[in-house]
Every structure is written in C-alpha cells, then in structure tokens.
Image 1 (cartoon, rainbow, N blue to C red):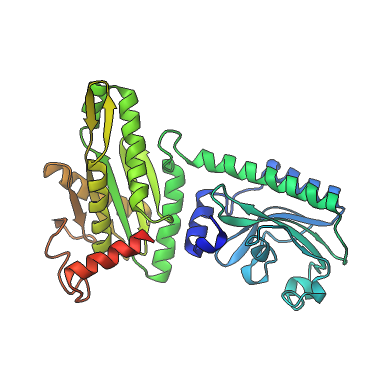
Image 2 (tube, one colour):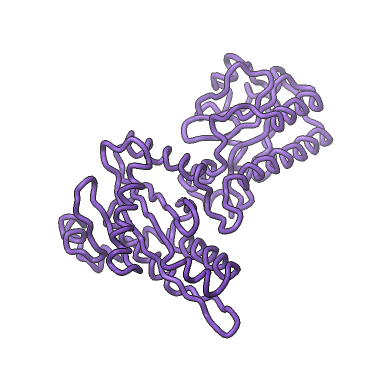
Length: 362
C-alpha cells in the first residue's frame, strides 16, 4: 500500500495501534539512537513518531525536548518517501531554510532520515541523524542507518504484537481501551460523533461443547475477519474477553452505527466451519450506543452498549439493539424512531443507506 492510498486518519489510527506515544524511554530504542550518533559521528539522533500536530521522540540523543510541532518536522517529510531523505545544508533548502529548528536551537544543518513504515506500508515516522554543520553522507553510513531503521521497525512490530490478541488479531482489552480513551477525548474536544458496538457470539459455549475448542477458535477468528471486512481500515476491533468484542466508530452517528452493526450481524451469520461430517454455524447479538456529552471514560459508552446487547439477547439473539444517550429506551434495527426523516436530514431511506454504504466502503 502506497502512502498516497492511506488517508491521514488511517495513518494516525495505525500509529495509535502501537500504543507508544507518550510512553517512557526504553533501552531497546535508546541503544539504536546511541549507535546512530556513534557510527555516523553526529551529535543528534532520534526515533521519531509523527502524530497529528507534533513529532514525538520515542528516543533521542542530543535534544533538549521530547517533541516539537509537526509543521517544523523534517521527519514528517522523510516518512512519506520510499528512500532516505538527505539534506546536506538545511539553510540552502527552501523547505527548511526558515524553519525555527534551523534558525534557532538545535541549529540543524545536516539531516538524514529513513522512513519507518508498518508492515502494510503505513508511514509512522523516521529514524534520523542530525548535525549542526553542513556535511555529506557516505554510502556506507547510509547503509548503516538503513539497517538501524530496520531494527527500529522490528522493535515497533514487537510492541504491536503485544497489543494484539494472539488468536483473533483483535486488539487486547487494555490496548483497545487506550485507543478508546483517545477517541472519546478527541470526540469530546471537537464535539464530533462517536459510537460504540458491543458484540457477543450467540450460544458460543454450546458450540464449543458440541464441536470442540479448535472449531470454536476458528469461529472467533472468522468473526473478527468478518468484522474487519465490513469496517473502515481505521476502525479497531477489541477482544474484551472470551467471545465478546467491542468496536469504536469515530465520526459515526447512531443511525450509521446501527447500519454498520446490522451489516456485521449478517456477515457473521454467513460463517460456516466444517467439523467432520457436521458444519458449525454462528450468529451474533450486537448492542449499539453513542457518545453522550457527559461521558467521562469509554466505559460509560461500553456500559450503555452492553445494556443494548443484553436487550438483543433477551429478544432472541442474532439481533441489533441500540440505546440512545442515557435514555431508558432500547430500540431495534429498522426502528422508525431511529430512521425518521429528521434524523437522516430528510434524505430518503434508500439513498441514505447507499450513502452510508459508500462511506464505510472507503
């Protein structure tokens, strides 16, 4: 996947999956920046992750700060390329000649940055070497920096693996809740929509008992795959425990979230796993909730979605139920109240559904 095919929101979502921003320094990364300064004979080196409005240093040597504004970032330019970005004298480069990091501390003159990209090609940041005087870089030095960038990505991928459930590939509960906190904080700050789905595989214990744990495990894997197939690349599925999953949908109002939940329900109902002469099938019940202005933690939304999930199970399972804000009423998919003209801004139902399908196919 090229960087042109990845939207900025998708890139940031991928970066968040690593759960590294604003974490403590780690020797595994500090060792790499020390090697960069020693082997390239430069005073400054950094493992840089480029966030929405800043570049943050997971490790750095020779700098006095842990982050700088993104609009001053050399690494934000370096990460979008496919080759190392080399600047022999920043004062002569029109992109950076008036950059505060060039005209003031730390007086950048020479810069070389190797992109740090995830396994799917998503740009995350760069491993960079900086000098306070103009210079050239030798082929040997560039090869060394490339090798160290590869080692950096190996460390980053190890951190990513630690956030993922080993069976299904969904995010582990703690890592997922960390992202959910960020989603909620951003939605509250920007006053944008945010919805939460709680999903539970129906009669899973009975399926496990009848077909065995190997089949049960395969069903869980396929549930997550079915969900990912219906979600945007930027949406994250979290495994909350056993056969229960949670999904946060940034920028998604209730009417859209219920449509998404219904698509997930239908996709899961198509799962079939062969078990000798028999075939195991599965369905799922899904509860939906939307952000409330007074939500403090993601658990507030999760609790409401869980209440809607309970209603879906009580109604016979293999259904979608939603709970609005903090009101007592639990609604069903295709409820007239949810899909009333004022809630879809007067757009005819069929056209609104097509628009939502196109939105979530992107």
